[in-house]
Length: 120
Image (cartoon, rainbow, N blue to C red; front, side, top):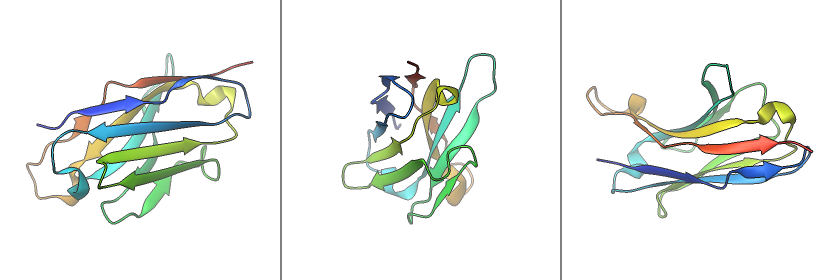
C-alpha cells in the first residue's frame, strides 16, 4: 500500500509562486509515473502535469511555461513548481501515482489534495 501526502498549498497573490510537494510512503515510488491534477469548484478534475518514471514531462496548455513538474526518487517525492499564478489556477491540487507504465494490475494512488488559492 502506498500513501501520497501533498503539501505546499496556500493563498498567494496573482503573479506569485508556490511549490507543491507529494511524498510517497513505501519503496515503489521510482517505478510509477507521477501526475498532478486539479479540481476547481463546480468543475471536473483536470490534468495539470505528468512525469514518467524516466523523467519525461507533459503539461496542459493552460500551465505550459508557468509550471514545472519534477521528481526526486531518493526522497520519494514529486514536485510542482507553480510560477506566475493566476486566479484561474485556484483549485484543489491532487497528486497521482499512475501505473500506466506498469503491467496490468498495479493500482493507482491519489493524495488527499491541497488547496491553492490565487487572489489579491
